[in-house]
Amino acid sequence: METREALLGRRSIRRYKSDPISPSDLKEILEAGMYAPSAINLQHWYFVAVQDPKALEEIKSVMGGVVEKFQPVLEERFSRNPEQVGITNRFLSTLGGAPVCVLVFLLKPDYPDRDGAMQSVSAAIENLLLAAWDKGIGSCWLSAPQRMGFGPALQARFAPDKGEFVAMVTLGWPDQQPKAPPRREGRYTIV
Ligand SMILES: Cc1cc2nc3c(=O)[nH]c(=O)nc-3n(C[C@H](O)[C@H](O)[C@H](O)COP(=O)(O)O)c2cc1C
Image (cartoon, rainbow, N blue to C red; front, side, top):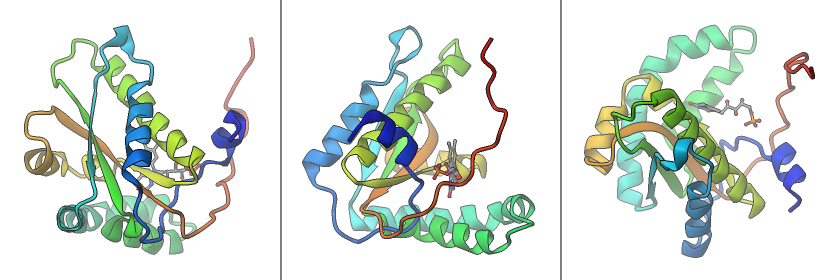
């Protein structure tokens, strides 16, 4: 796939087929994450790729709590298209049936340049999404579990000594072809 096609064509996928992701595809996606740029090359990320069905169920039960707390945020954000609230809740509580969920951590909680460290982790997450899309594998980046305060529970269960939970990324073969949400005008200037 051409880089530009991947950049413009990638979509957040919230419904997946149950087909598994092969170990080699998963490894290549995670390695693409590790090749992201990072502030003073500290490579501030750590990934836990969860594919064991029982462990995925544990994540989904945490997501039940996320849905409950996230409801008011979604209702306000989507006040003009309330059907989006149900769609998002369904996705959050089921992970869209994704066969893999990558938990992303900020490896050390005490980096002196926390903003730079978070930027590095974000770059790594974007690499995961694009490397997956390049293979036809869909993904969705989720910050809701962290935002709603469920990071410590995920850390304790899946990576007690790997720093701070930042986000999760679902991965799977797309079972939908969403249109690109329109991009807002005027978000750049060339000086
Ligand atoms: C930092 C970040 C956090 C996000 N968190 C969520 C989330 O918690 N739940 C969700 O359904 N989508 C989440 N998304 C996906 C966005 O909703 C999506 O990227 C946006 O609507 C644009 O759609 P696109 O990815 O198809 O271009 C997140 C995206 C980013 C970059």
